[in-house]
Image (cartoon, rainbow, N blue to C red; front, side, top):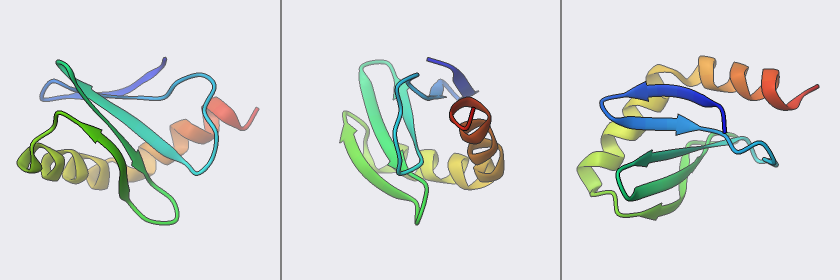
Length: 78
């Protein structure tokens, strides 16, 4: 599970058996979420995060969007 970002305790990562659509997983403590990135940023799964934490997660994703997409392609487009 490659970690892409670790910011404010949020771990953004991929599982090694990922599939499209392009998405990223986020965890912090016992909470986790799956965020689809393409065609649009969308929370497809969330367990344990509060609304303000999800807003923070989305802001981090927006700020690092290109890097996350690039890492997806580096990891899975082999």
